[in-house]
Image 1 (spheres, helix red, strand yellow):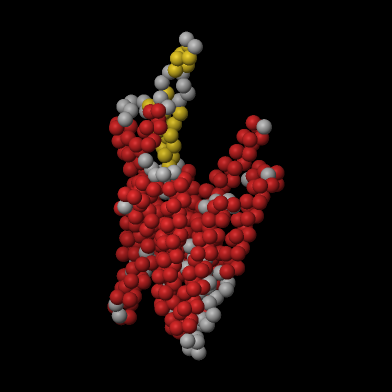
Image 2: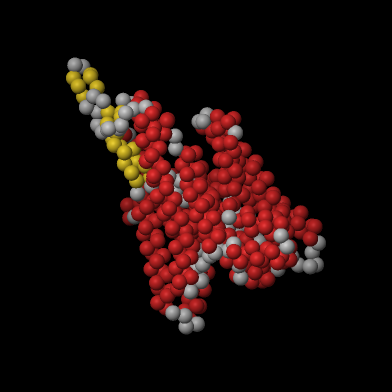
Length: 421
């Protein structure tokens, strides 16, 4: 850590990257405190405090949703658009061909994702305003409020998407993940404040300390699993050069236990909001209330679907990002082979088995971490951190580790350039 601080002072371009990242985050947080005009914020805050599911979604928006700020949609429209685009890439062959065209193809798909984000933001903003129409001041025309708010919310979602891309391009870390990370961290003081007030009322201190102990264990295991990898040894054939035989050094290919990182959890969390929106308009208030009795943050059905989605997106993300045929061909072209495995189809099958097993173990761990804080909170009766959950821990730890790795890689590359020069 001290070495990284030293290199932060040494390399001016690294300082600029970190400065730009903080500057963009500051803009994002300032916009989070600008509410839409004409909203009764006091009633809205009471409504959110009584709903665990909405509190969970508000956590990922960094508190924007409970304030109905200009950034209420957050980065969610962009994430949903990315999910839809990746699904379409598998369904439509032309999009798949475009994705395999290298950098040019990725730019085209990125542009399609931006257009789709605009459409998703438009739909979500209209649904959001209709959902919270009861919190609009009566002296304001709802038609005018609807039109102006939709324009502001869509513009805010596009602006946040742009901020995320700027952070990725000119700052440190992945912009979208970092904005979600900041949104979660910004809500932490409220959780600690509510917990402190709970203890002052005479609640069991042991239960609170036990919950914190479980949280520390979760963070420890997340770090261990995020860093875990399976190393597949690669050997190379001997080469004959100038009448001498040279042995090529052996190497290995690292396979991460969780191939998609926190993306399966983020995708799953984003999709879980759709049943709430759809059922609200398909059923009456009484039937919708009955639905909420079974589909809420700490219910069995909610977490069951959550785990299923995590498994689906873990395998889906791996299938999209990992190509065993291409990896096998690259090893073969370099004269490499896996000891005990025939090159070609056997190597491809070997990679598929390894990745499939790792993905299953990784998805199981993600599901376990996602639901264990809910179980412990119900056991200890400490509900002040109920909106946090294992999902937030996975995202916070995953993004923090990725950020540290990017800084380390940057410092190593600068050292290497200095050595060459």
